[in-house]
Amino acid sequence: MPWFIFALCILPWFFIKSTTLAEAKLYSETVVPIVAIIATYFYVGSDFRRRLWKKEIDAHVGEQIRAALLDMVPKDLAVTDHEKQALLEREIFRELTGVFWEAIGRNDILLSHKEHFYSNGIVYSTSIDVFLICGSAALVYVVASLPTHNLEFLQVGALFAAIALGSRLFVTPRRRARHLALSAEQLDLLRREESDFVSKRFREIIASGRRARTGQ
Image (cartoon, rainbow, N blue to C red):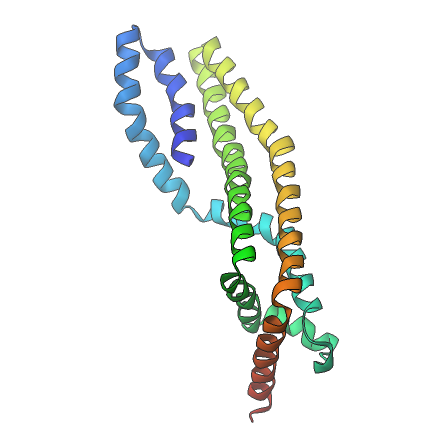
């Protein structure tokens, strides 16, 4: 999807700069795809994109999952507040969250629901891609319009700025809300369908962690 967004952002440049429709068509079929592929390669490989998406998920869905995880720890284990905090900070947290995916893989109902979660996640992450890529494109076009005094560059820049802001202000919050709702449904199904399995695995992991801490 980032490739497609980059291609759409690059295309107006060559249409504006081309003197004939045939020239614009040639550029759109040759130069634009190549430049879009190169831009996508660096964009996807950039740490900034990954960090922004991780920050988005951790701040919302991640917080929901952390609360659900602690709520599903068997009460008779008498996990203290200090232990709960440690569970969220240590490597053991990865094991506990891994139990969720184990349980989902065991159950056809949970597995089918997972597809809806992933589908929404694609749109959710794409809304962030649109904001970043179109926002950057808007800046490039506006800057290019200054020395060239090209009104078309300025108009295209304004259009991409509007698209970027629209994605950030309207699409991302809606996809986020949908993701939270789907996550809540998934966690509720998990409690109903696989609570025994989750409790058993949590017991094993927490007991193992306690033995490791005490050296037994």
